[in-house]
Length: 195
Image (cartoon, rainbow, N blue to C red; front, side, top):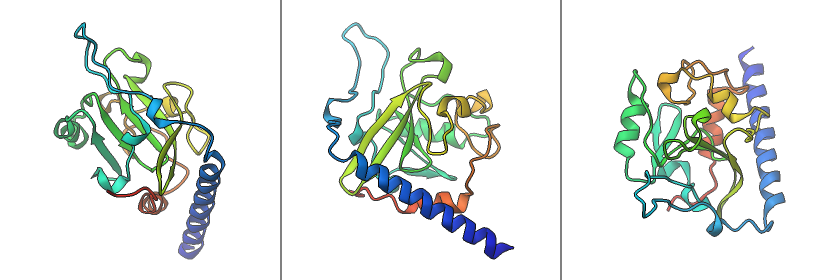
């Protein structure tokens, strides 16, 4: 029984990895210039701080801070605050600039207050990763779909409100169709440079 479950997990991981590599090969050279995406926004009018991620903001998971099963970073120098929220059993609201990734090919980024109240101001990303870096394939709030065909916003909206749209095993979200062992394998083979 255990051997069959493990074999199924390994086969699922291999299929998932093959799909990721096929997508990465298929988009190479599609003209998606990461230097023209996103950017930082803080208007001269004193508007609130924002963070519009660029492809170069998504780095190898090993350069981020691991919290239980996911990785977290903050590109606005609010990492300590983001980690306090991530580690608090009471939850909290993540600060602007927080990047959360479970696997290399997907991310969520905390934007300015009011960016999109329906997603608690999170922007979701579908990424292609390779040894040369990251390409943003799709970004948005309510239209981004993960590798399993699930809409990111609708899945994350099931999280208990105190956890600010972040899913974990006990946060109220539906379980993923793969186990933690497969997720750890996918995390460990992030092909992007560590430097």
